[in-house]
Length: 99
Image 1 (cartoon, rainbow, N blue to C red):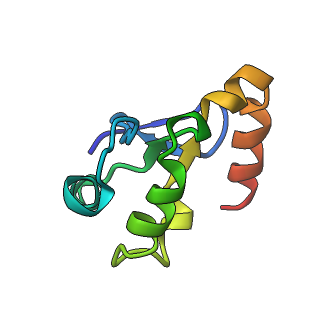
Image 2 (cartoon, rainbow, N blue to C red; image 1 turned 90 degrees about the vertical axis):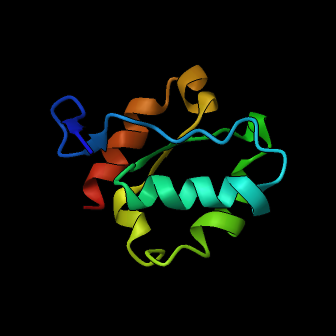
């Protein structure tokens, strides 16, 4: 996996992003796809409350993944709502302070 640094922060984000927008059944293909993406190094998950997948993503996927105790260090969840409200820069600043 190739990574890029976000602006002048210390966040190293994968060039590929995982997006569960069109999941119909998380328990089947969605969970398997999520696990494979994380195992391959994807650390950017794009989801939104508008997609109605964010609860499924957290419970069915992140909560069950074998690296779940490490995921808070590698996964950044972005939402379209943050962009619309102009909060995306403060979101990334708060995330970078956590590392």
